[in-house]
Length: 155
Image: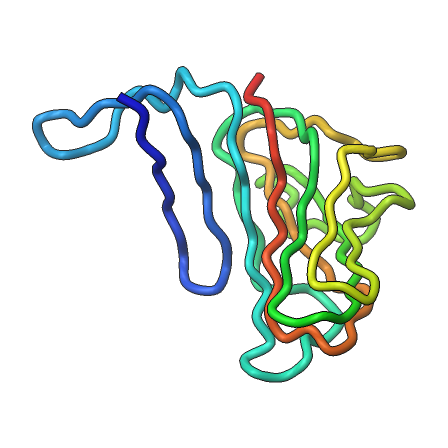
């Protein structure tokens, strides 16, 4: 059986995975450990106003080792946004700009409502289980709601 499983926290992000899974006797999904590709998503919502610059939310802890392969941005309206991603260990929480993983190729939408890239030049693509990701909006115009999705391979 192939099932799509999504777990979300209000306006802060989500984890989605697709693969062969099963339900145990308590209706809990099992078998996710065998899934090698997953999507890690984070929603940034301006509450009806244009998204402001700075740190969005309080971060997202990644529960497994993985490598980032691609990013996708999808916005509610056409506009522009640049998002930096910071990563650090839980022990060093919270991450700072010194912990950026995006190099000069930050996830960006420019005069559109979407953006995508698998060219991660300058990125630190490795994430260890328990690492915390922070999402910092460097600039934004017009966009009031955006979802950043990282396509990852579990390692």
